[in-house]
Image 1: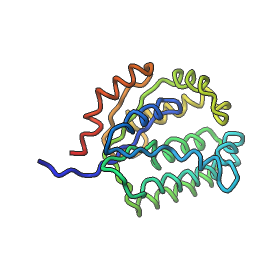
Image 2 (image 1 turned 90 degrees about the vertical axis):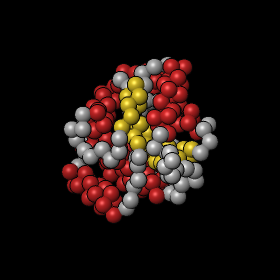
Image 3 (image 1 turned 30 degrees about the vertical axis):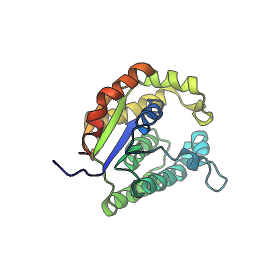
Image 4 (image 1 turned 45 degrees about the vertical axis):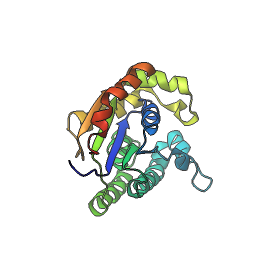
Length: 216
């Protein structure tokens, strides 16, 4: 019998793809530590709200927010594990490959900002160990995400358009499905996530062993 080892899982997906529900589901399992995106930090850095500022004026505040996102995600990655399995919402990789990339490609991030963030990112992944054993990708249609977004009414998200969700979706697909853009640092398990809550919970149960398999 193989010795049990620590397992790190990243949960990736578009805005409103159902990541919170998935994390809540697995957080009820013993031996699993769940790390959600540190959004509260992004909303309040010593009294400032870089997340809100970025949505209002991406060209001006994109670099500010994404530098801080990079720092706070790195902080999660290097945090000592408190359980044998860690499931983490997104990663420093998707922060760069999806969200920074989208700001740049859509013309909302100046080239110099993109270049500086990219050099920081490259330095981090070259010099700091960021372990990952499995990427779980909640694959949703942008339309479904848009409908869910309208229902949940988070203040900063009111400005998010269907076009924005489509751009994020396409970057995720290129990265995790078609392997067209960037390195994929671990095997990917795709879970179709357009369904209602009951069906999604059933799918998580069906995939439980695949998700927790590396830990054996």
